[in-house]
Image (tube, rainbow, N blue to C red; front, top):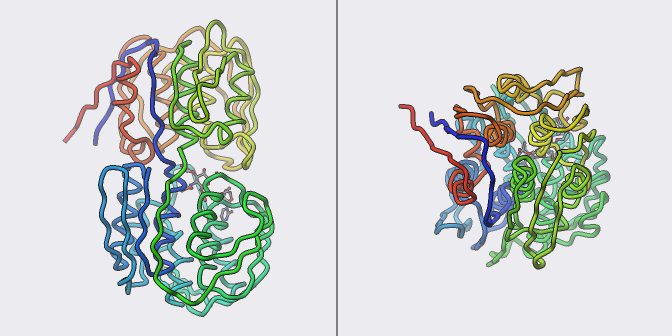
Length: 420
Ligand code: EPZ
């Protein structure tokens, strides 16, 4: 189990290239199962999670070639509609395979995802939606057994769910009748998935809105598709927050500026300066005080919950009191006890954290509890006095490509220590 040793405080300088989006790549990779074909995906981040997804689609029978950030998936000979517990337990997104399997094979056996680091993350919306589309779903010793030819339906999501929207979209690939999703997720990763499915021959009206009208095609003719994955907006947000916390100036490349609008707008309120370099590159800088600001997370285009831990880390050094409320995950706060170990002043009441800004953080031994909590600890370590040791960084490896090398190239003194 590797750990990082980070020496702080540090100033950043230089430029960083943002990788492809983990949360767009995962559903797009698994959707290749829904229709036989050869799929060439570019800008796929090389992460623990994308490697797990490759293993999953290989167990279903796909042949996968990977060369750096290009992944070629040949799904013509898939024949095993099953997702084993061993893979699903390591990555919840494996559950997205239910839609593509049901759509292509009219049967699927998929392990229920286990627990998550920060509390219950049910998949009841996914299951209810497929039942509404005509599938019979049974729970069998920890596995979902789903059977039946999917048909047209109107799906109303009580809460806008990224995963359930994606799963249903992929389930529609071979459905000739119309499926309507009301209160669909509007995240850029869902838009990227929609654009990919359209290349597969699926008709989708309302892409990027909360009402999607989808019509697939059961002809099942093999396809040959090339697609570039969108940039990772959460990785971009993480590096920009690092620039603010260290009062630095850095350049980000390979970004989509629209996708990070809410993050940029909120960071500008705490003092960030942004200049646009080109359509896909910005220079960000911060000097002086970090202005305390309250934050409430929301679904896209609101402030993303996947930036909440990094935001709290930032507010620990602000010039006053602020609150951060997570409306998506009410108990996504396992990073707070670790930030307290670095000397932060934070109290938590249900899903609202109250942060009292302090002068500086002091290094200590801390532990990653999940992907974004890990990112927040790395940011905090970069501004802490002394050398901080962060254990269980395998969480961070799930979602940040070449993180320590990118940070090192910006001037961070970071070492990976492998503990056998
Ligand atoms: C996706 O998770 C992302 N994961 C998460 O990013 C992200 O935090 C989340 O969307 C919200 O933006 C991937 O894309 C792989 P949801 P997902 O379904 O799809 C409730 C990261 O750090 N809900 O939009 O699982 C749920 O509990 C990860 O990269 C149900 O109650 O999230 C939550 O409160 C972490 N029943 C809310 O909806 C359901 O069946 C939103 O969840 C489904 C969801």
